[in-house]
Length: 162
Image 1: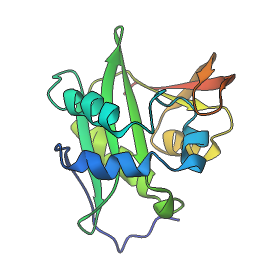
Image 2: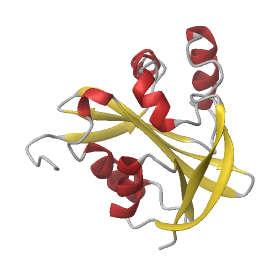
Image 3: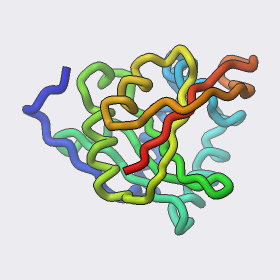
Image 4: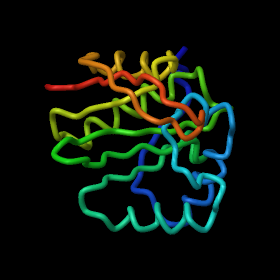
């Protein structure tokens, strides 16, 4: 459930935030649910180089999610082909508190490009609910190789139009 007593803020991600973001994405359970993760998720230098470069890419909107001033995750818009997509990551110890939904709603007020897409592993029920709670509609499926699972899996494609 969403706890209205915490202060959620988004701010543009800075390079020093990436150390915390890197630590979050080392969680094996979170990686399993995310499924479509980088091949080098345990290589800190590669992670910092890749995501550090994203901070200056004008087509990417990287935001850090804070709760009461503490970094709890990240959210971003990026472009693949001609499609804008969103991605987010919440530290597992903060799951189940409504943070991802509140962060995505706040992000969508900053990032107004539409349509915008979200993709989620077929069995990541929590992330599916986040997208649906924010107005995204499931429009299809795809299959892809999930690095975190080392196998091909189904993913659901969601779109937000208005």
